[in-house]
Length: 379
Ligand code: SF4
Image (cartoon, rainbow, N blue to C red; front, side, top):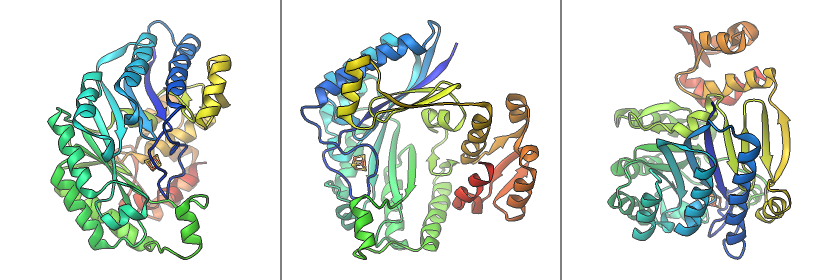
């Protein structure tokens, strides 16, 4: 019996943010109906190929993009396709992402009725000027409003996404963001350090010298402030970028960091069945066409051989602040990183990037900031 995590991707957003390099930001419209129909078909085809009768799912994540732009009927159709393909363990975490302006009372109540028990709001920042700079159309007040509306509708598990390192963002701006965020007391906070990609509008503005980004040291200081404040407010820092009140760590995301199987549906969705990884076509039109042709839209498939699984398990496991359990690695892979990568681990310990305690290897505070330097040692 396999217990899967299920991801459903929506590529649709009402606008394209200046920094966004996701396979998202496509305008909803005439493609939405065919896309939803394709999702339902892909679920049925994949279920027939991948699932065993005794398989279950214990987490559901509608991400994107802005999946909350789907109507209640469209969401219901996809959920129906999923639950007829694979039983969902009662009480499973079911998350949907939204932007503040896509939440009103009807939507908030509909999401509850449909069974979503976790909502993730792409707040990004409470600073009006920074919101404009990102190309967002909502105000900071609408983040508060969306949050309040979701609470009134009975949503008791809400995540806020925040971004560190925005153009012109100062330490004081970041403190104000945290004041506003902690005032709402979300169950979960996900923090992203802004990455600037050349092909985005922001990338072009940075290249042309029209906007300036904070220095790495400033970004590091903001991250430290978040860690400190979150600790004071009772949040558990359980993964490099994620903070949760006790009992509210994201079950779905923990699957990705713990070498667990997941099925992804929709354009650009990724899947992993412990033997193979595959990725779908990235554009909605390409995805719809491919599913219409053969029921699936796989663009790339690769073998998850023992070596790549072991390497991924190391650096994904190290993303969790509890680190990796070396005895568990020994049991699952017949070796552990302190033996297979003894020289690298010794260097990382000497550089105070990782620490070994009670047969666990984990990132230090410095390692959390420089995690990519650590991960590259295990490739
Ligand atoms: S809302 Fe999110 S997914 Fe959509 S364009 Fe903005 S950053 Fe990209």
